[in-house]
Amino acid sequence: MSKLQIDPQLLVQNELLEKLRNLQAIPVHPITTKYWSLGGSGGWLGTSTTGILKCPDGVGSFQHYVNGSIYYHPSTGAHEVHGLIKSRWKSLGWERSFLGYPKTDETATPDGIGRFNHFQGGSIYWSPSTGAWEVHGAIRSKYSSLGWERSFLKYPLTNENTCPDGVGRYNHFQGGSIYWSPSTGAHEVHGAIRSHWASLGWERSALGYPTSDELVVFGGAARISHFQHGSIYWSSTAGVRVLKERVRVHVKILTMPTRFTINEQFAAMQEVYAVAGIRVDCATTETLNLPTLADVDVGGCTMGSVTPEQVTLFGNRNFVGSNDVVVYFVNSTVPGYNGCAAFPSGRPGCVVVRTASRWTLGHEFGHVLGLSHVNNNDRLMTGNGTFNITNPPPNLTSGESSTMRSSGLSTNL
Ligand SMILES: [Zn+2]
Image (tube, rainbow, N blue to C red; front, side, top):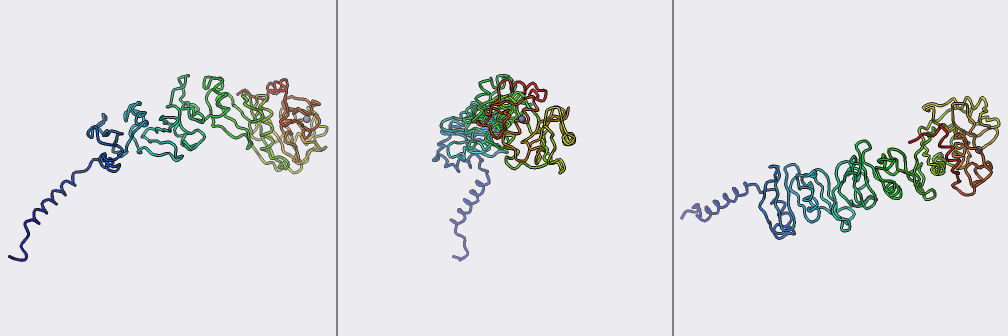
C-alpha cells in the first residue's frame, strides 16, 4: 500500500464539506438572523406562528412569533416589535400606516422607566403608567428637541390628534402639550399657562395657537407663552395674566445703570404691567455715544415742556416706529431725579438715571402712557419716589390700567 494512497473516508468528508459550503451560499434571511440574535425559539420571542411572509407592499417582509414580530425592509433592516408598542402600531395599520417600518428594536428609554420603538415616520413611546402612544412629524421634532421623556413633558398621553377647530394637531403629555398648526409650527405649552389657555378654550379661544414655547421673562422668575393673538404671563406674585396689548420699547444706553440691571428693570415693569394686561416688548437696544447728554438738563421735568438738551437727546430715535417708546439710560438728570418722562411732541419716551430704583422704568413709562402721580406708596405712580414703594410689586388701579391701554402707544395683539 502506497503511503500516498488517499483514504476513501477523507474523500467522503470533502464531499460533505462542499455540500456545507453550498448550504452557506444560500443567504439566511435577515429576519432569521435577527431571530437567532434574540435567542431563536429558546428566546423571549418564542416559536414562530407564521413563516417569513411578504408585506403587502411587496418589498418588506415579516414573521410573527408567540411573543412578538420581526419586520424587515431593505432600507431599515430587521427589527422586533412586541407588547403594547406592537399593539399600538397594529392599531394604526402596521407598516402601511404613516409610521412605516421599525427602525429600532424596542429599546429602554434613557430615564430607565419606559420603552420605545422608532419607526420611519415617527415613534411609539410606552411607560407603565401611560401606555403606548405615537408621536410624529413636527410635534415629535419638538418633543425630541426638548429631550424626549427626560424633559418636563415626560411621556405622551395621546396619539397625535386633530384639534377641534379642524386645523391644527396636538399631543398631550404627562407634563404639558405640544400644539401645531400650519402657520404657527409646533410649540409646547405647560403648567399654569396651559391650564389657563385650556380654561379659555384652547386653540378655539381668542388667543389662538401658541407661537412660542414657554419663555423666561427678561431673565427673571416670570414665564410667558406667546399666542397668535396675545400672550399668557405667569409669576408667583402676579399669578396668570392674559396680555392682549403691548408696548414696544427701544433701549438707548448713554450710561449703563448700576443699581439694577436693564433686565431687572424690565422684568419689574412687566410684572406690574401684566396686571394691566400689557406686554412689554424690548424691540431694540442701542448704545449712544453722547457724553455731553449723559447728565441731561431736564429743567422742571414737566410734561409738555422740554429743554434743548431733551430735544437733542430724544432726536435719537433710530429704528423706532411712531407708536414705539424709547428709554434713554443716562448717568443723571439735572436737577437730580430717578428719571423723567417729559418728552418732545411726537417722540414718546423717558430718561432713567444710572442709580434708579427697580420700579423707575415702569413708573416713567406710566407717565408716558398718561398716568399722574398719586400720594400712595403702595402704588407704582407714587409721587414720593419709587424707592419708597412699600409693597413690591406696586399696584396699578383698574382706572390707571385702562388709561394706559387707551394711550395710543399700546397696540392690540
Ligand atoms: Zn413720576
